[in-house]
Image (cartoon, rainbow over all chains, first blue to last red; front, side):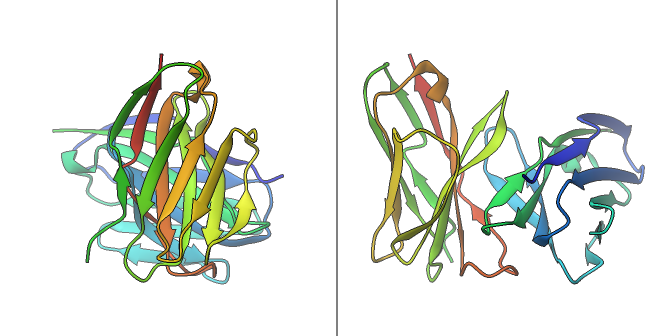
Length: 111
Length: 114
């Protein structure tokens, strides 16, 4: 059974800092992994999708890496801004195609 | 292009009642999935529909059901509501079931069961 863990659960950093969010999964037989952002009371916005055959994806200040063999993915945020404050979730698509979500990392960027 | 639309945005019900939530996917998207989000359990998969057929189902009781129409719009129904059903219900759509498709989420329906 696939399980997805995100560490840390919460993170508070000063503006301008580079930061790394972690996602671990127990079954390496995945189709893809997505990183999402969720603002309070809102739906999720897809940030980056990494296919199982890929090692990383980049979009602007965001870079996500995938290491299937170790069951890990990281989301790197460069030069953080207060507008980056949100909950970040990773989700793994595996097994019968359904997505399993991590519990998220709540990020606060202080101005 | 309009995003994923969920209605209603908020719902208040009492125990024992039933509720129907609606989701209109992005135009052209054929896959719709539903999730329940609570502070304690996080995001949990309910079910996924593709071309009017349920393709996947999560570990929820039979009180939770859904369907998809020929225009890809989807509804989910919860019967005999319990206090523990209070949650944010999220719908997501994607073009297809294949592995490279991003999920696009609606803003959700916040259900409160009193």
